[in-house]
Image (cartoon, rainbow, N blue to C red; front, side, top):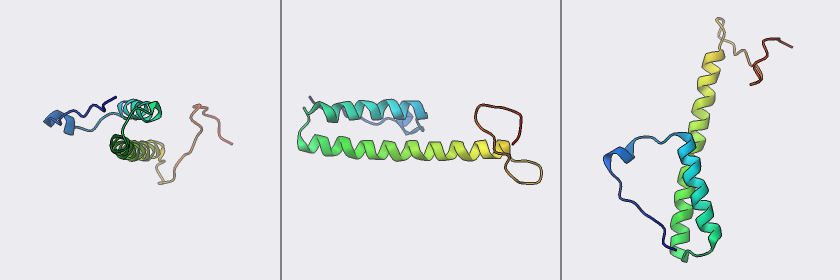
Length: 90
């Protein structure tokens, strides 16, 4: 099974949403687990997966910082609450 390597176009340079990164990463894992790739294809696919995983991690970190900014109080402290959204404090 050949790994599809599409040529990059200017629109490909735009950052991909997190869910698209995860979707592509899942496809790469399926290809690797399928056992039909040559050693060279497996290495290329693995390298692409590592790149995607790092990019997804950066997006998660960025999202966490944005949430912290949204929860920051007037005095500069972070009002950390569970994601369940309960307004009651401890």
